[in-house]
Length: 514
Image (cartoon, rainbow, N blue to C red; front, side, top):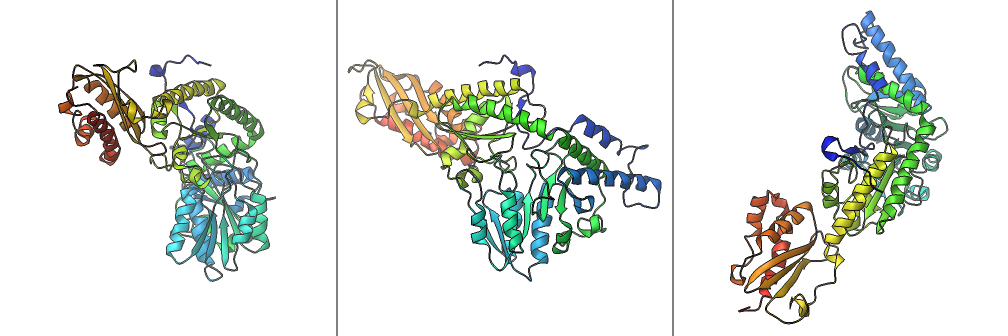
């Protein structure tokens, strides 16, 4: 399947809706009405004049819309700057307020950093935190929660939908265990609210965090749901003007809150239809990728949210893969961590080895995704995975010492091939050179490589400079010089040393006088 598309004249296809979404035009329109003179730009706390009163009315309409999305009451919604602040308020505010009852918290290794980092903060304050490991499908067994609960446990925090693999946790069962033991339960629902049905009236949840920019609202605004009878368990973590019933002080961003409300209303209206459409796109994408072979659907066998597909590819280096997909906007994991070349900690927690975890791509489709977008992505990914696998040393027989100096026909002669490699399968860098030697010089050079884009670029550069070199000249330059010539970050120097090892081994196998 090939889709004709001119990349030079268009933006990349956006498949990173789990990271953020564009603002819906209806949301932007309502936000604009709260920004300029003549609009409802007032401070919602200024109750003595009409400007403040109109802004306050807008905020309360939005609060009702946000609450309705998850089945809450308006007074159970506290507005924040986003999901991260909501998580911090729930975890730090609840744990600190109840430290006299216990100092033990339970969470999972696969949580977002906005949950893991507050938990680490609590550890520095003397709390004990249990980090549960999911099963290979990415789910936390409710029985693991039961086993981890202690007399001094005050809070359990388990995310509703995992942001990298889309797996849906059994929030009902986990919350019921917590309620039976009198332990507060918090869930990060940033990837759930507005995407799958969420109803806090039927779920035993004390605190729930979500935000606007995952559901076509503005960045910079989120909410924390706090069940009415759990409000006394929470204390603020910042202080100021006493807004939001003292839990989150600061002048309310009326335009952002209004946008959040509209986004929630739109999401609720199309929830079932959109979920079915996104599930169809997700499955279309997976079926096309599965045909490649050597692919792993992360979260397979578990219930998953409609819009997220996480796939690992055997035999390719993840950074080289995503760099080569310039026509696609997607992620190698959580958007908060994808700037790092380290393998996803979520996939490592699922038992994926480092190499497979590092080769994962997170595709996330959304409101403006089309079947044509999916087909274009399939064509691009299949092409690049096939190319990188063919480039890997694993694509040809392993190097044997007896074959390092033979001619192209396998007979002895004046023209022969020197072959040597460095690194190993399973390591971050594995390279192999083949140098054709004739009349005392390198006549041609080719390579096989598994490695990062810098590794591939240096090897391509070297193979263009090796022809014409004699045995006594050795390789062209040194790793330090290559980094300068090709602007390779200094932290990648170790990978270039592997390349040098393979080249030096080739030259060492060059018979004297040949």
